[in-house]
Amino acid sequence: MPTLHPHAQKIVTRARRRGAHFSAAANLLWIPQAAVIAHVLATFLIGGAVDPVGAGVAVFALGLMRALLNLAGQRALVRAADLEIGFLRRRIARQEAATLIPSRIGGAGALAALSTEKLELLRPFLLRYTPARHRVALVPVIILAIAAWYSWAVAVVLLIAGPLIPVFMALVGWAAQDASARQMEEVGSLTDILTDRLAALSDLRLIGAGAALGTGFADATEKLRARTMAVLRIAFLSSTVLELFAALGVAMVAVWVGFSLLGEITWGTWGTPITPFGGIFLLLLVPEFFQPLRDLAAAWHDKSAAEAVRAETETWDNDARENLTGSGSPARALPFTGLATEGLMLHRSGDRLKFPDLQVAPGESIALTGPSGAGKTTLLRLLAGLDRPTGGRLLLGDTQLAETTADQWRASIGWMPQMPRFLARSLRHNITFGPPLDPSLTDLAQLSPVQSSLPRGDPTQLGETGAGLSGGEARRVMLARALHHRPAVLLVDEPTADLDAVTARDIIAGLLGHVVHGGTLIAATHDPNLIRALSREIRLGE
Image 1 (cartoon, rainbow, N blue to C red):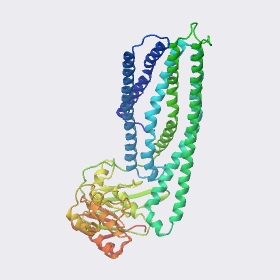
Image 2: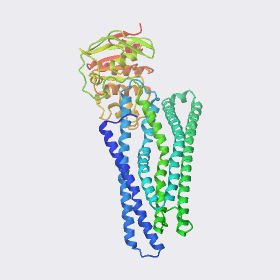
Image 3: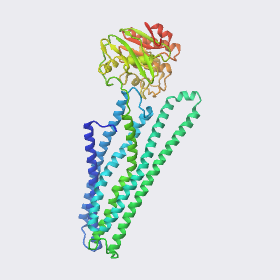
């Protein structure tokens, strides 16, 4: 399990202990409450005088104290759970944002499932299992001591019935943990399938694969249903075992107390008969002896689910992945005085790519060309600091691209990927991430037709796949995003691929507009029109 920051760990541990202590103290307050109630009932039985007001005030005050202690304990436990789950979510988000290679636990869907619904399964464990385990270690022991004071027979019954519950819970828990782990795997797989199918939904409909898609998704959901039902069967089995032993224990004590008070049983005490107060007091305490065990058994499934989530989180945390150069944090843009590469190469998945040495001066426009697989996109990613070279170096003026300069360099560039990527936010947010659009940017990227085609203009919400935009409009939005912060260097990957002639011409005009305003352009492309429009061509793969 990923460890918390020492200061955060101290806060979480303190809050968790405080919550567990408050919860146990609230349970222990039932003992004086039961004593008051037993005194009132016993006095009625023997015909004595009772002060109902005083007894009522005592019971109410003790009940109010229990409620306040439970409230304080739950607040402390909720705070500890929020801190721990929030830390893990931020850790996953930061780590994945700074990682070059996806995690072994799955794709984007599996990671989303882990950081959202799966991590939430830790909350019931932290809120219920942790305090229940603390109560089991304290409350039954004290009640057992009180029971033994009045009757060794009742203490023997509790000693026999009590430990059997955790023993059977442990046996059931081993099966529950395995079933929960299999269920977690199915949740991640189903989320991955759903994410992939939604991303390609329009293409799947075009090729008529809707029926096969529905069948495959139905099979995946059926597997998840079967895994979930297996977990529920184990949960119901555990609760049945628990209730059986608890009911037997309470029934045996009730029978002994009843016959002892009637005088039919004369054994089981320490030489003196059980009094009405002692008998009623024991009957009120025995259910509370089993209650912490009940709570622990009810939370046992939460423990199994949490352990499955923790195992998956440990797999993610122990996954050795190469991180992005730099910290990924915001930085001041680095002044661009030119870039150069020397012996740049990359080895990955058995492939070895070696790139020609480059010299790029400010204001140049360069076309990276070559056959598919020659490494055009890879070279752009290396120039952007998104991949780490396994050999050679990249010079920014006289400074080498390294951990200390990567964030500043990335703040100096604009990136236009081959596949448009969107957030499920407004058009404006997808370009500027909040601020209003600059009119000159609108003209440069020729966004006016895009804005006029949307029902609400800039505030129109877009889907994660750019729903509502055509392919050419999506490219214009990507160009506007890349140019938004006026980068010194613009890196674009196949900006005119699969576009009609008019839209491609508009995109080329926007790219050249960046160069006219003093910017530097490096484009990976197959488009002969774009190649002719740029000042220099560098061919890869020869």
